[in-house]
Amino acid sequence: MKSFFSLFIVFLVCISSFAQSAKNYQVYANKIKQFSKPARILNKNVDAQGNGYIEFTNAKNQILRFRLHNNELQQGSCSIAFEIYYYENNFLKRIESFDKNGNLIGCLLKLNGEAIIEYTIEKPDLYLKKKKLIDDAEGNISMKDDSSEKIIRVRYFNANNAPIEQPKPTYISSKTYWEFNIRMSWP
Image (cartoon, rainbow, N blue to C red; front, side, top):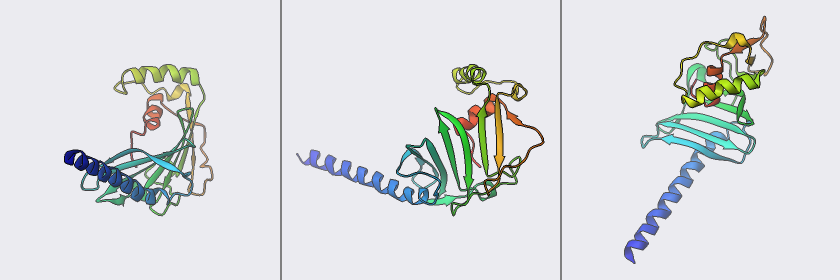
């Protein structure tokens, strides 16, 4: 009976600890007004020293991600601290970058100094064929740059949500889009 009681106490402490850490991380998610609440933790990879990343998700198919260093919000390139990924039918539609205060932030290290990138799959059938190849190889496949096939178009916006004009439409490769879709990179 004592061992059952001890096990039960350990279980309650673990549940309480997880709930408390989720609550602490929610403070960061609350900084981003564009991220719809309520939200829940999708992925949490934080070590005992408080280093790692958190991803929250919500009913609007948004994923908010940020990193921690010593349990403090870590800023990446160009002071980007948060990113929201917007999905529709499991396909990435938009990425927004924010500073530590929750303001949209452009980045001169990015191609066009953009704060927002929108993705449009203009040839969905062709992309799905290429996606299957990439999925089957779990991403470990070398593919030629197919951006000239005009499968996935991108549009860029500044920190004021105004379009950044391009001389002609911009396209990215299917593999690059696939990597963004599964959130492989960090700012």
